[in-house]
Length: 416
Image (tube, rainbow, N blue to C red):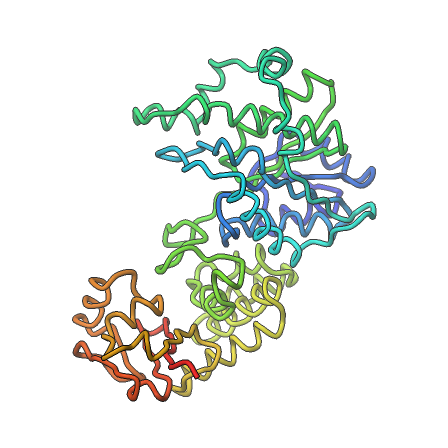
Protein backbone atom coordinates (compact mmCIF):
# COMPACT_ATOMS: atom_id res chain seq x y z
CA UNK A 1 0.00 0.00 0.00
CA UNK A 2 1.36 3.41 -0.98
CA UNK A 3 1.47 5.86 1.89
CA UNK A 4 0.11 9.39 1.23
CA UNK A 5 1.28 11.75 3.98
CA UNK A 6 -0.60 14.88 4.98
CA UNK A 7 2.31 16.81 6.52
CA UNK A 8 4.55 18.87 4.25
CA UNK A 9 7.72 17.44 5.79
CA UNK A 10 6.79 13.82 5.08
CA UNK A 11 5.71 14.77 1.56
CA UNK A 12 9.14 16.29 0.94
CA UNK A 13 10.91 13.25 2.40
CA UNK A 14 9.05 10.86 0.09
CA UNK A 15 9.01 12.99 -3.09
CA UNK A 16 12.69 13.87 -2.95
CA UNK A 17 13.97 10.38 -2.06
CA UNK A 18 15.04 10.94 1.56
CA UNK A 19 12.91 8.21 3.12
CA UNK A 20 14.16 4.64 3.58
CA UNK A 21 12.06 3.58 6.60
CA UNK A 22 10.03 4.94 9.50
CA UNK A 23 8.98 3.33 12.78
CA UNK A 24 5.38 4.61 12.53
CA UNK A 25 4.49 6.64 9.42
CA UNK A 26 0.95 7.52 10.44
CA UNK A 27 1.67 8.54 14.06
CA UNK A 28 4.68 10.67 13.03
CA UNK A 29 2.65 12.29 10.25
CA UNK A 30 -0.12 13.10 12.75
CA UNK A 31 2.43 14.64 15.16
CA UNK A 32 3.89 16.77 12.35
CA UNK A 33 0.42 18.10 11.53
CA UNK A 34 -0.47 18.74 15.19
CA UNK A 35 2.38 21.17 15.95
CA UNK A 36 6.11 21.91 15.93
CA UNK A 37 8.08 18.66 16.14
CA UNK A 38 11.70 18.72 17.39
CA UNK A 39 13.90 16.17 15.61
CA UNK A 40 17.59 15.38 15.88
CA UNK A 41 20.59 13.83 14.24
CA UNK A 42 23.76 13.00 16.15
CA UNK A 43 27.19 13.68 14.68
CA UNK A 44 30.33 12.31 16.30
CA UNK A 45 33.32 14.65 16.20
CA UNK A 46 35.83 12.32 14.54
CA UNK A 47 37.20 15.02 12.17
CA UNK A 48 37.30 18.82 11.89
CA UNK A 49 34.62 18.81 9.21
CA UNK A 50 31.77 16.67 7.97
CA UNK A 51 31.97 15.44 4.39
CA UNK A 52 29.48 15.04 1.56
CA UNK A 53 28.36 11.68 2.99
CA UNK A 54 26.66 13.61 5.85
CA UNK A 55 24.97 16.11 3.53
CA UNK A 56 21.78 14.06 3.10
CA UNK A 57 21.28 14.23 6.90
CA UNK A 58 21.97 17.97 7.00
CA UNK A 59 19.46 18.54 4.18
CA UNK A 60 16.83 16.56 6.14
CA UNK A 61 17.29 18.94 9.07
CA UNK A 62 17.13 21.92 6.72
CA UNK A 63 13.84 20.69 5.23
CA UNK A 64 12.53 20.08 8.72
CA UNK A 65 13.07 23.74 9.56
CA UNK A 66 11.72 24.95 6.20
CA UNK A 67 8.47 23.01 6.82
CA UNK A 68 7.91 24.55 10.27
CA UNK A 69 9.69 22.19 12.68
CA UNK A 70 12.66 22.35 15.04
CA UNK A 71 15.99 20.72 14.11
CA UNK A 72 18.43 19.64 16.82
CA UNK A 73 22.06 19.07 15.89
CA UNK A 74 23.60 16.86 18.56
CA UNK A 75 27.38 16.94 18.81
CA UNK A 76 28.85 13.71 20.15
CA UNK A 77 31.25 15.23 22.67
CA UNK A 78 30.55 12.21 24.89
CA UNK A 79 29.99 9.38 22.39
CA UNK A 80 33.09 10.32 20.35
CA UNK A 81 35.11 9.17 23.38
CA UNK A 82 33.73 5.66 22.74
CA UNK A 83 33.47 5.45 18.93
CA UNK A 84 30.61 3.99 16.86
CA UNK A 85 31.47 0.40 15.83
CA UNK A 86 28.67 0.24 13.23
CA UNK A 87 29.89 -1.57 10.09
CA UNK A 88 33.54 -0.84 10.88
CA UNK A 89 36.26 -3.45 10.52
CA UNK A 90 38.27 -2.09 13.45
CA UNK A 91 38.07 0.19 16.47
CA UNK A 92 38.21 3.95 15.90
CA UNK A 93 41.33 5.67 17.27
CA UNK A 94 40.49 7.31 20.60
CA UNK A 95 40.65 11.11 20.60
CA UNK A 96 41.56 13.44 23.46
CA UNK A 97 39.06 15.92 24.89
CA UNK A 98 40.92 18.81 23.22
CA UNK A 99 40.86 17.06 19.83
CA UNK A 100 37.12 16.40 20.18
CA UNK A 101 36.37 20.03 21.11
CA UNK A 102 38.53 21.26 18.24
CA UNK A 103 36.62 19.02 15.82
CA UNK A 104 33.26 20.21 17.18
CA UNK A 105 34.28 23.83 16.52
CA UNK A 106 35.00 22.95 12.89
CA UNK A 107 31.78 20.99 12.40
CA UNK A 108 29.63 23.80 13.86
CA UNK A 109 30.74 26.03 10.97
CA UNK A 110 29.02 23.66 8.53
CA UNK A 111 25.62 23.69 10.22
CA UNK A 112 25.45 27.47 10.40
CA UNK A 113 25.28 27.53 6.58
CA UNK A 114 22.23 25.28 6.38
CA UNK A 115 20.19 25.87 9.55
CA UNK A 116 19.14 28.95 11.55
CA UNK A 117 19.87 28.77 15.28
CA UNK A 118 18.13 30.85 17.93
CA UNK A 119 15.42 30.94 20.59
CA UNK A 120 12.31 30.80 18.38
CA UNK A 121 9.89 27.87 18.12
CA UNK A 122 11.47 26.56 14.91
CA UNK A 123 15.02 27.84 15.52
CA UNK A 124 17.56 25.04 15.70
CA UNK A 125 19.33 23.89 18.86
CA UNK A 126 23.02 22.98 18.95
CA UNK A 127 23.59 20.50 21.80
CA UNK A 128 26.44 18.30 23.01
CA UNK A 129 25.78 14.90 24.60
CA UNK A 130 28.74 15.42 26.94
CA UNK A 131 26.18 17.58 28.82
CA UNK A 132 24.56 14.42 30.22
CA UNK A 133 27.04 11.62 29.44
CA UNK A 134 30.13 13.09 31.13
CA UNK A 135 28.51 13.13 34.56
CA UNK A 136 27.04 9.63 34.55
CA UNK A 137 27.61 7.43 37.58
CA UNK A 138 28.54 4.00 36.22
CA UNK A 139 26.69 1.86 38.77
CA UNK A 140 23.54 4.00 38.66
CA UNK A 141 23.62 3.92 34.86
CA UNK A 142 23.95 0.11 34.81
CA UNK A 143 21.06 -0.27 37.27
CA UNK A 144 18.71 2.35 35.77
CA UNK A 145 19.49 2.03 32.04
CA UNK A 146 21.57 -1.12 31.43
CA UNK A 147 18.87 -3.42 32.80
CA UNK A 148 16.62 -2.51 29.85
CA UNK A 149 19.05 -3.94 27.27
CA UNK A 150 19.19 -7.57 26.18
CA UNK A 151 22.71 -8.67 25.20
CA UNK A 152 21.15 -11.39 23.01
CA UNK A 153 19.28 -8.71 21.06
CA UNK A 154 22.30 -6.41 20.85
CA UNK A 155 24.35 -9.26 19.39
CA UNK A 156 21.71 -9.75 16.69
CA UNK A 157 22.08 -6.22 15.27
CA UNK A 158 23.69 -6.30 11.85
CA UNK A 159 26.29 -3.66 12.77
CA UNK A 160 27.61 -5.93 15.56
CA UNK A 161 26.90 -9.25 13.86
CA UNK A 162 28.92 -8.38 10.74
CA UNK A 163 31.95 -7.65 12.92
CA UNK A 164 31.63 -10.86 14.93
CA UNK A 165 30.97 -12.97 11.82
CA UNK A 166 34.33 -11.82 10.46
CA UNK A 167 35.90 -12.74 13.81
CA UNK A 168 37.11 -9.17 14.30
CA UNK A 169 37.51 -7.92 17.83
CA UNK A 170 34.70 -5.78 19.26
CA UNK A 171 35.79 -4.09 22.49
CA UNK A 172 33.47 -3.71 25.48
CA UNK A 173 33.97 0.06 25.06
CA UNK A 174 32.48 -0.03 21.55
CA UNK A 175 29.73 -2.44 22.62
CA UNK A 176 28.47 0.29 24.98
CA UNK A 177 28.02 2.76 22.11
CA UNK A 178 24.51 1.66 21.18
CA UNK A 179 23.40 2.01 24.82
CA UNK A 180 24.76 5.56 24.96
CA UNK A 181 23.07 6.50 21.68
CA UNK A 182 19.77 5.14 22.97
CA UNK A 183 20.26 7.13 26.17
CA UNK A 184 20.81 10.29 24.08
CA UNK A 185 17.34 9.91 22.57
CA UNK A 186 15.80 9.40 26.02
CA UNK A 187 17.52 12.52 27.39
CA UNK A 188 16.61 14.64 24.35
CA UNK A 189 12.97 13.64 24.75
CA UNK A 190 13.03 14.27 28.49
CA UNK A 191 14.86 17.62 28.32
CA UNK A 192 13.77 19.11 24.98
CA UNK A 193 10.63 17.22 23.93
CA UNK A 194 12.47 15.70 20.94
CA UNK A 195 10.12 13.35 19.07
CA UNK A 196 12.12 11.95 16.17
CA UNK A 197 15.66 10.78 15.39
CA UNK A 198 16.95 10.77 11.83
CA UNK A 199 19.87 8.76 10.53
CA UNK A 200 21.16 6.60 7.72
CA UNK A 201 19.56 3.18 7.35
CA UNK A 202 22.62 1.63 9.04
CA UNK A 203 21.49 3.38 12.25
CA UNK A 204 18.08 1.67 12.36
CA UNK A 205 18.97 -0.68 15.23
CA UNK A 206 20.47 2.13 17.33
CA UNK A 207 17.41 4.34 16.72
CA UNK A 208 14.96 1.57 17.67
CA UNK A 209 16.95 0.99 20.86
CA UNK A 210 16.37 4.62 21.86
CA UNK A 211 12.65 4.39 21.12
CA UNK A 212 12.31 1.21 23.23
CA UNK A 213 14.33 2.66 26.10
CA UNK A 214 12.27 5.87 26.20
CA UNK A 215 9.04 3.88 26.24
CA UNK A 216 10.30 1.66 29.06
CA UNK A 217 11.73 4.46 31.24
CA UNK A 218 9.25 7.35 30.82
CA UNK A 219 6.50 5.75 28.69
CA UNK A 220 6.71 8.33 25.88
CA UNK A 221 6.14 7.58 22.19
CA UNK A 222 8.93 8.78 19.91
CA UNK A 223 9.89 7.96 16.32
CA UNK A 224 12.71 7.01 14.00
CA UNK A 225 13.10 7.92 10.33
CA UNK A 226 16.01 6.71 8.20
CA UNK A 227 17.43 7.76 4.86
CA UNK A 228 18.93 5.39 2.27
CA UNK A 229 22.67 4.76 2.39
CA UNK A 230 23.78 6.52 -0.75
CA UNK A 231 26.17 5.18 -3.31
CA UNK A 232 26.79 6.67 -6.72
CA UNK A 233 25.45 4.80 -9.75
CA UNK A 234 28.88 3.21 -10.26
CA UNK A 235 28.75 1.75 -6.73
CA UNK A 236 31.10 4.16 -4.95
CA UNK A 237 30.34 5.39 -1.43
CA UNK A 238 28.98 8.94 -1.41
CA UNK A 239 31.43 11.49 -0.04
CA UNK A 240 34.62 10.07 -1.49
CA UNK A 241 36.47 11.12 -4.64
CA UNK A 242 39.65 10.00 -6.35
CA UNK A 243 41.70 12.25 -4.08
CA UNK A 244 39.96 11.63 -0.76
CA UNK A 245 36.95 12.81 1.26
CA UNK A 246 34.89 15.71 -0.08
CA UNK A 247 34.83 17.89 3.05
CA UNK A 248 32.21 20.60 3.62
CA UNK A 249 34.60 23.12 5.24
CA UNK A 250 36.37 25.43 2.80
CA UNK A 251 39.71 25.16 4.60
CA UNK A 252 39.71 21.38 4.04
CA UNK A 253 38.27 21.31 0.52
CA UNK A 254 38.31 24.47 -1.60
CA UNK A 255 34.97 25.71 -3.00
CA UNK A 256 36.35 25.15 -6.51
CA UNK A 257 37.21 21.49 -5.80
CA UNK A 258 33.82 21.06 -4.09
CA UNK A 259 32.07 22.54 -7.15
CA UNK A 260 34.11 20.31 -9.44
CA UNK A 261 33.08 17.19 -7.49
CA UNK A 262 29.41 17.89 -8.27
CA UNK A 263 30.16 18.92 -11.87
CA UNK A 264 31.73 15.47 -12.35
CA UNK A 265 28.55 13.64 -11.28
CA UNK A 266 27.76 10.70 -13.56
CA UNK A 267 24.78 11.23 -15.87
CA UNK A 268 22.60 8.63 -14.12
CA UNK A 269 22.89 10.41 -10.73
CA UNK A 270 22.04 13.97 -11.77
CA UNK A 271 18.26 13.87 -11.23
CA UNK A 272 18.52 12.01 -7.91
CA UNK A 273 21.22 14.35 -6.58
CA UNK A 274 19.27 17.46 -7.61
CA UNK A 275 16.31 16.23 -5.53
CA UNK A 276 18.42 15.39 -2.49
CA UNK A 277 21.01 18.16 -2.42
CA UNK A 278 19.24 21.21 -3.89
CA UNK A 279 15.93 22.96 -3.31
CA UNK A 280 14.88 23.13 -6.95
CA UNK A 281 11.28 21.95 -7.51
CA UNK A 282 10.96 18.17 -7.94
CA UNK A 283 9.57 18.56 -11.48
CA UNK A 284 12.59 20.64 -12.50
CA UNK A 285 14.98 18.08 -10.95
CA UNK A 286 13.31 15.33 -12.96
CA UNK A 287 13.40 17.39 -16.18
CA UNK A 288 17.10 18.18 -15.77
CA UNK A 289 17.93 14.58 -14.82
CA UNK A 290 16.28 13.28 -18.01
CA UNK A 291 18.44 15.41 -20.33
CA UNK A 292 21.04 13.75 -22.55
CA UNK A 293 24.12 14.63 -24.59
CA UNK A 294 25.57 18.11 -24.04
CA UNK A 295 22.42 19.18 -22.19
CA UNK A 296 23.12 16.85 -19.25
CA UNK A 297 26.41 18.72 -18.76
CA UNK A 298 24.42 21.94 -18.40
CA UNK A 299 22.31 20.16 -15.75
CA UNK A 300 25.51 19.15 -13.91
CA UNK A 301 26.60 22.79 -13.82
CA UNK A 302 23.22 23.72 -12.32
CA UNK A 303 23.69 20.94 -9.73
CA UNK A 304 27.22 22.13 -8.89
CA UNK A 305 26.10 25.76 -8.60
CA UNK A 306 23.07 24.98 -6.42
CA UNK A 307 24.95 22.70 -3.99
CA UNK A 308 27.98 25.01 -3.79
CA UNK A 309 25.74 28.04 -3.17
CA UNK A 310 24.16 26.31 -0.17
CA UNK A 311 27.53 25.23 1.25
CA UNK A 312 29.86 28.12 0.36
CA UNK A 313 27.65 30.95 -0.92
CA UNK A 314 26.58 32.25 -4.34
CA UNK A 315 29.83 34.16 -4.93
CA UNK A 316 31.93 31.04 -4.41
CA UNK A 317 29.73 29.07 -6.82
CA UNK A 318 29.94 31.79 -9.49
CA UNK A 319 33.72 32.04 -9.10
CA UNK A 320 34.09 28.26 -9.34
CA UNK A 321 32.02 28.11 -12.53
CA UNK A 322 34.01 30.99 -14.06
CA UNK A 323 37.28 29.23 -13.17
CA UNK A 324 36.05 25.97 -14.69
CA UNK A 325 35.08 27.71 -17.93
CA UNK A 326 38.46 29.46 -18.05
CA UNK A 327 40.32 26.19 -17.47
CA UNK A 328 38.28 23.81 -19.61
CA UNK A 329 36.81 25.89 -22.41
CA UNK A 330 39.50 28.50 -22.96
CA UNK A 331 42.58 26.59 -21.86
CA UNK A 332 43.41 29.35 -19.37
CA UNK A 333 44.82 29.22 -15.86
CA UNK A 334 41.86 30.23 -13.67
CA UNK A 335 42.61 32.24 -10.54
CA UNK A 336 40.43 30.11 -8.26
CA UNK A 337 42.33 26.85 -8.81
CA UNK A 338 43.95 25.15 -5.80
CA UNK A 339 47.28 26.92 -5.43
CA UNK A 340 50.64 25.82 -4.05
CA UNK A 341 52.77 28.83 -3.05
CA UNK A 342 56.49 28.21 -2.58
CA UNK A 343 59.26 30.37 -1.16
CA UNK A 344 62.73 30.54 -2.70
CA UNK A 345 63.92 28.56 0.34
CA UNK A 346 61.41 25.80 -0.56
CA UNK A 347 62.88 25.60 -4.05
CA UNK A 348 66.55 25.81 -3.07
CA UNK A 349 68.76 24.67 -5.96
CA UNK A 350 65.75 23.20 -7.71
CA UNK A 351 62.54 21.27 -7.07
CA UNK A 352 61.30 18.25 -9.02
CA UNK A 353 57.95 18.34 -10.81
CA UNK A 354 57.23 15.07 -8.96
CA UNK A 355 57.35 16.98 -5.65
CA UNK A 356 55.19 19.74 -7.10
CA UNK A 357 52.54 17.24 -8.20
CA UNK A 358 52.48 15.65 -4.73
CA UNK A 359 52.56 18.92 -2.76
CA UNK A 360 49.78 20.44 -4.87
CA UNK A 361 47.54 17.48 -4.03
CA UNK A 362 47.35 15.97 -7.51
CA UNK A 363 49.03 12.72 -6.39
CA UNK A 364 49.31 11.02 -3.01
CA UNK A 365 52.97 10.01 -3.32
CA UNK A 366 56.05 10.40 -5.46
CA UNK A 367 55.41 6.93 -6.84
CA UNK A 368 51.88 7.95 -7.93
CA UNK A 369 53.23 11.14 -9.50
CA UNK A 370 55.89 9.25 -11.50
CA UNK A 371 53.27 6.76 -12.68
CA UNK A 372 51.04 9.67 -13.75
CA UNK A 373 53.88 11.09 -15.84
CA UNK A 374 54.84 7.69 -17.29
CA UNK A 375 51.23 7.03 -18.34
CA UNK A 376 50.92 10.45 -20.02
CA UNK A 377 48.34 11.60 -17.48
CA UNK A 378 50.23 14.71 -16.35
CA UNK A 379 50.31 18.09 -18.07
CA UNK A 380 52.31 21.25 -17.58
CA UNK A 381 50.51 24.38 -18.79
CA UNK A 382 48.16 22.12 -20.82
CA UNK A 383 51.05 20.41 -22.65
CA UNK A 384 51.86 16.72 -21.99
CA UNK A 385 54.54 16.28 -19.33
CA UNK A 386 56.76 13.49 -20.61
CA UNK A 387 59.80 13.77 -18.35
CA UNK A 388 60.68 14.62 -14.74
CA UNK A 389 61.59 18.31 -14.91
CA UNK A 390 63.46 20.29 -12.28
CA UNK A 391 62.29 23.87 -11.59
CA UNK A 392 64.40 26.69 -10.17
CA UNK A 393 63.07 30.01 -8.85
CA UNK A 394 63.40 31.65 -12.28
CA UNK A 395 61.21 28.98 -13.89
CA UNK A 396 58.48 29.72 -11.35
CA UNK A 397 58.65 33.50 -11.73
CA UNK A 398 55.29 33.17 -13.46
CA UNK A 399 52.67 30.69 -12.14
CA UNK A 400 52.57 27.27 -13.78
CA UNK A 401 49.52 25.06 -14.15
CA UNK A 402 49.79 21.34 -13.41
CA UNK A 403 47.08 18.87 -14.43
CA UNK A 404 46.33 15.27 -13.55
CA UNK A 405 44.02 13.90 -16.19
CA UNK A 406 41.38 16.15 -17.71
CA UNK A 407 39.59 17.32 -14.58
CA UNK A 408 42.12 17.98 -11.80
CA UNK A 409 44.33 21.05 -11.89
CA UNK A 410 46.49 23.15 -9.58
CA UNK A 411 48.61 26.28 -9.79
CA UNK A 412 52.17 26.52 -8.51
CA UNK A 413 53.53 29.98 -7.83
CA UNK A 414 56.40 31.75 -6.15
CA UNK A 415 55.67 33.78 -3.00
CA UNK A 416 56.06 37.55 -3.39
